[in-house]
Image (tube, rainbow, N blue to C red; front, side, top):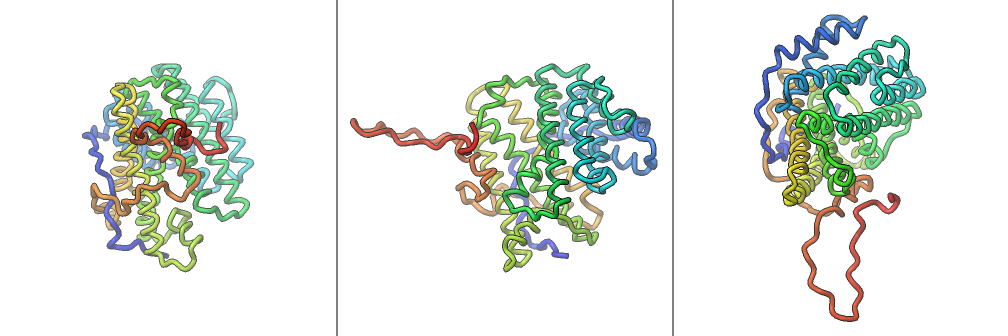
Length: 373
């Protein structure tokens, strides 16, 4: 097992989290619901998932009203059960996973669709989706359904690669990792609980998409770092950004791969901060709220990863990782990851001096990859 360097850089995150609400009542209510919709689970397993769901929800959505907190805590606990079913292989291979998760993507659109019969996972999710529709707006639900569908497609992609024995490149790994982590839904959940409806012209703005995706990437790379620290303690090992870097650079030592992985994450975090400042300059309250929801994804995920039993044990170094307002790599250039590099094109450029008469204007790069419309 490659040990995480004890002198690795502190976590670059100058964002300040808000105060978190208590979780005891939320855990109890979530566990009671989860036990009723998940027969066959032990009480200990149900309670652990409820602890994880409530802990994640209070950190991602600390300003949510009580009904929003409970609804999202149920969803988070359910989603961890789903993740465990898929990761453990209990759901089967890619074909079996696809037949379930793509049906779930339809259930979020139509809770009464009666798909998957009496499968507990589907029955519980249909109940959650119906509850969500009772208080979320149609626009919020449309965004949530889009994010959920993206997550389900990510599961299929990940399992298919694993089943075929494909060793992903760094670019492929990061594209899959961001999709199958469910991080898109965290921002959608924040929008619902903060009462935000982002209109379509803003939702599809390339800078807003780049902000959303970069926040998701920071979150999953932070998870890789915390999970690696947990695995160092427990002897487990799974695919993460550090192992992929090692795979592409077999001459590296693990500390070199760790340094490169952390630098990649810090450069994305630095971009996120520039994009958030850029969007806040618009003086649009809706965009300010949206950026705030994305901030909470990053800070809440960091705090959740440092405290959750899913990622740490009492002796894990992750719980004591220091934070800093300085990136480990200050390079402002786009990262060498094609699926992410286009984000840097959405940064506003300084105003250019007028072109002399008779000269063509200086070309500007498109805010999208070349293969996107």
